[in-house]
Image (tube, rainbow, N blue to C red):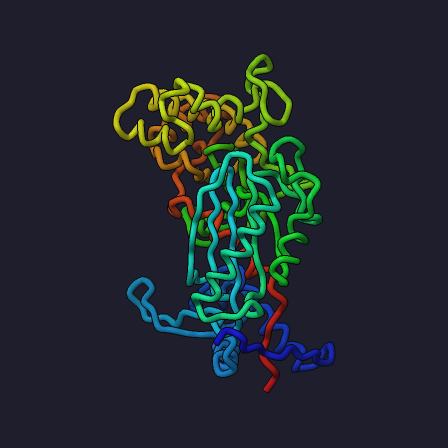
Length: 397
């Protein structure tokens, strides 16, 4: 039911057919990036005329490439367009420091199956990639789909990633995964292309597509939890740096005489405000082993837990001020496990950032909590898988 494919033609350059195919390709690529749009939105984003968009949508819907439905926007009836589900399936995988989430979606990005499992603190690539393969096989089977229906996979890791090689870009940060071409290893297990990226980058993509920063061209997604990192969206594109290490906010030095970080430096933000630093506020017999344990205690009014979270927020705000001074984002979105603390974390973060950031004519960027409830990275991984699909377009009529 998911295996229908549409042939790709290679028309003569400069011909009317070539122009039509180029317009179709532009429309399809826009839908791959945004999931679903109205015809009016498609015209605005592609630069094509409303009449051209309407004709292309009608042709590709008849060919089974697109699906349409009527919706209401601002009290007006509109035609919403998305890629057709029968073109195949994609998967998004988010492996964080302490959990794994997997989603299977259609090529329009609509999730049709989703599961999550906890992970041990020092998980290794071979065991977890085997688990990914097994879980995806079970999920596809439950959807009456074949392995061949899986066209692409996006994978997020809790580390900087060189997307050109699919390898962890920073030694020491993710033990058990270093020196491994993760994309190649998982691709061999699944028999399908895999794209690997840092979890915060995927979180930024998820927020831009479906979350609090939709429609915002330049913003920072800050993931605060077991580790701390940032995804940087600059003028609508993720900025990864020359080797994938951009956005490693957790390894900004706050105290040169502070605790040793996993990266080998002293006083990094991760070592001061990350999960291990939060847990260190409690005796070993207190039953606090994960960030979620700290959150549960804070929710019950535990003063130590509430103070630890607030202190973490202040530390992140100080580091964030440097990022704001360098990049001038118009918005900061906070995600990750600790974002569930909401204003207990964000209020001191906002205050510390405002004090340390350069004053300007415009107010400091607003800081908001992710609207995606911990799924930003997973949905970003799905979007990454969709964007990696080879171009599929209908035969010219």
